[in-house]
Each structure stands twice: as C-alpha cells, then as structure tokens.
Image (cartoon, rainbow, N blue to C red):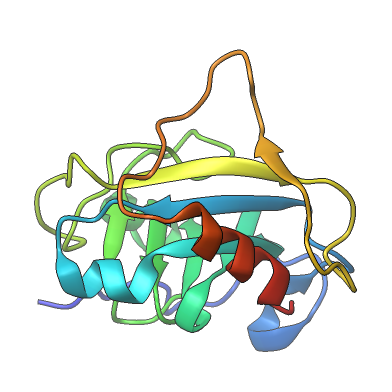
Length: 171
C-alpha cells in the first residue's frame, strides 16, 4: 500500500516559500541520483537534484520531473522517519525510502525501491558541490564533495545528462 506520511504539517521550515518550504536564494548542494534496478523509478528519478530549501532541519532537493528528495522527522512515527524520494513533499506516493535517521545529507546507499520493499543494492545518491551560485550559470563546475572518500558513482547516469540537468534546472 501507499505510505501515509507527512500529513501533520511542514515543521522545521525556516521561511514560508513554495509549499511551506524554506526557499534559499541559490543552491548550496547538488546530489546525483541513479542506478535504480526498477526501470520506472530509474526513468522518473535519475538525474541531478539541486538543493532548493530545507525541510525538517535537513536539505531539500528538487530534481528531474519536479521530483523531490527530502528528510522527514519522526512526527508521524519512527517507521516514516528518514529520507524520501518522490513526486511530492509529504505526499502519499514515494518511489524510494532510506531509513537512515542520522545522516545530515541523503545517504549514498541503502535506498529501498519500492519505499516499503527491499534495499536496491544498485541505487546511489552521490553528494556533489556547486562552484558558485546556480543562478545564471550556463555550465556550473561540479566536483565531488569529499575527494578523500568519494561516494559510489551512479551506474546508470550519463555525465553529459547530469551536466545538462545541472545547467538547465531553475530553482
């Protein structure tokens, strides 16, 4: 069945923006999402996600097809606390879920697809950093956030597509 999470409000919001989410003047982080075994989830969710705000005290990211990657705290019960990937913030549909409750950014591995199914061992979320603001940038330089310990690279994401997403997504 579909999850019933996120119905008790948007707490943790710093400033009222779109859908009651804190809005930042420019993106601070980018994550690359991909490698899903499920072809439908792969088609809907693969690509670059730009930080567009904050939700429940953690970064909120918007990606391809207006998909959202966000953290939900324990207000609706521990089973719903963790990182979510889906079409709507706090909605009743989600494509993937990660039960990591302590990571300040989306975890690189451990994503369940579907959200209440088994962990997809191929799914990856790689934390990146933008060099400067995304606003007005035509080709932002993207580099791994932690060169000393690089995150696993997504297996089904073309770097050219990632660069195109990074340049084209308007926050």
